[in-house]
Length: 247
Ligand code: GLN
Image (tube, rainbow, N blue to C red):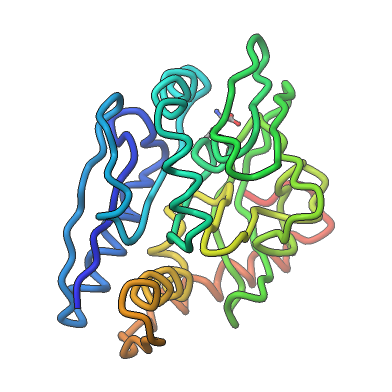
């Protein structure tokens, strides 16, 4: 077995160590003896989605997002088909916002990919801090760090999780991220996957199932340290509850 991971615009969308998500995906495959190739997708180059099993888009500043946006318009039809046909995607923060119809920044309306009928609007107060979610996608709480000026309005789409502590999609502390078909969009940096190996394995199992046609159960890995760290964040979060932002 083997997976091909397409990494969108590493030179533009690369905030807060989100490359760690890529290392995590790669290593958790290699540790199980599964082949992996990472294809860095350079801005402006054509993308052959038929050769990709998993797509990763990281976060970026508003300025970098604007640049990314222009390049994405040229491949939006192919990206849309990839998603509708079951392609697996992880999009973080700026990447998540770009999956939607538009991102209204302080000064400009950036046209998104329009793959999801969601949109984002900027507000001056940034939403910054550690965040904890409960998600139907995994048993453990999802832990991470958010830092965004955009508020993402997802309408009736399924969120990634309910915010236990933190601010989330619109800053009201209710819901975070999105889960649509095999796409996860989220504001969680951290990076997300090394902190939450269950989500990493879920993405890998999804991509393997799409590629090989039958359910794949990845063998367990020794994730005790990650679990201890996650539980510690949840404990700290409980202590902070009701006492404002969680840093
Ligand atoms: N520029 C976007 C915002 O501030 C996304 C930031 C990010 O990717 N962390 O909302």
